[in-house]
Each structure stands twice: as structure tokens, then as C-alpha cells.
Image (tube, rainbow, N blue to C red; front, top):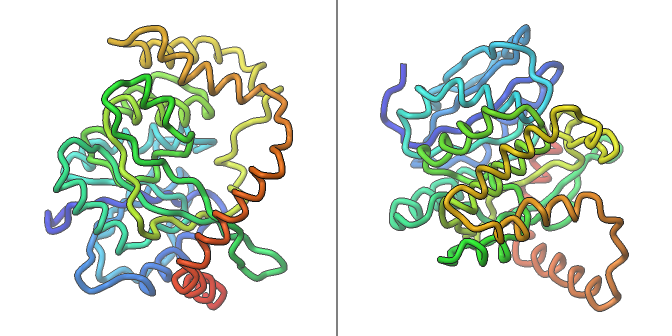
Length: 309
């Protein structure tokens, strides 16, 4: 039963053979939570998978089972949409993979920004990658979160968008569900992520706050990976799904936006990338070093705690 006490819903999946990650996630929450930061947690168990024993007295934990096996991001988005009646009881929501971590304090800051700024639909912050090598976690580098996007012209918004994943952001629920409703009409995992990102940029402003928001494990679990391009292009339903994506981007817009959105994505997807020049490499290295230096205490605290649990 939802208490109505909290207005943020965190969405987490308990997938096959990944119970240990869910337990670890709750241990991390205990470490980084603060007394006045509360949110509800929706855990969707994959069909046939049992939720491990979790000590979650402080949180309103909502547990539901998926209707079928989960094979990729499209299934994940559809299972969230199946729980739309639950999501509608909240003002804000965000999805997080079981081995990533969103810092509770940054959720609260994102919520405050969205409450104070009606013209924004989602909010996130700075992010970083970590990895496990020889049974020990360590920091890797800065990870691109969606940049602040507030241009009035849609074509400019797509030009400015940095290509980062939008669905880890804290969203106003009505916009999150609007995007999932469109994704519900396609079946391709790769295009599900692409459509989410481009619709998010299309329907509203996104804000990137100057705080530590997300720690993301690298590499992704195979279930979240996009297919290799040679396998992807052979998908028989790809053209059908691609037309749905194009129709959603084009609706109420000129053809020109396709050049800065889905056509740009496809070009990058199939383009053989060349090495960047020395100056660009040096600039990126400097940005990564600078990011670590200004956030090193929080990052090291996170990594050290992760290695203890």
C-alpha cells in the first residue's frame, strides 16, 4: 500500500542470477542515505526470479513480478509501463540498473530543482564509471550525463544534445510515462534507448546539476548491451521500428530535425570512427582529471564502501 508520504519512486529490477546486486544496492543506500531523504522503491522481479531477503524498514518497498522473461531494454521499459498505475501516484521517478547507483542526496536536489522550474521535465548531475578488476572495485573516469538542454528551437536542442542516456535522470512522472507509451509500440532494444533519449530532448528541457548524481558500473551487464551493428541490421523488424521512431520525432516538426537526431545516430552507429587528434585527447584527459580532483572525496568514499560490502 502506497503511503503517499514520498513523491519520488526509484525503479529497480531484480533480474535472473543478479540477486546479489540488489542486496548490495540496499547496503549502499544505507551508507549514503540521510535522515530527511526518503523515496519509495519499486522492485520488479523477473518472472521466475525470487527477491532476496532485504532489510528495508526505512523505505516503502513495492514488489511486483514481471509478466514474462526479460531479455533486454525493451522488455524493461515495457514492464515499467505495465506498472503505470503505480507510477501515476508519484510526482517523480527514475530508473536505475541494479549495479549502478544514484546518490540519494542528488535525487533530493534534482527534485527541488524540478519543483522550482516548471519548464524542465528531468534533472540529473555529474556521473562517473567504476569497474571491478581482480575482485576489487576502482574508479575509471567521468561518464557523460545529459547536458543541460533548454533551447527553444528543437533543431538546436538536438544539435546541442550530447548523446548521453536520459533515462537515469529524475523525471516528472507524466513525461516519463509519455515516453514509455511510445516505446511500448516497438520491440527493438537498441531503438528503445534511442527513442527514449530523443523524445526526452523533444518534449522538454533537461537539467544537469553540478553535483555527483550517478555511479555507473562498467562494463554493462550483457542484458543491457546493444547488439553489434552487423547483428542489429539483420533484425527483420528493424525497419518497422525505425519508421515508428521517425514518425514520433517528426510529429509536429520539420524533416530537418531528423538530420540532427535519428539520422545522426545511425551515421555514428555505422561510421568507422577515426582516432581523435592529440589536442582533443589532451583536453578530454584534463577534464577527467579535473572531475576526479573536485569529487575525489565522494568518489573514494563510494569505492571504499563498495569494496567492503
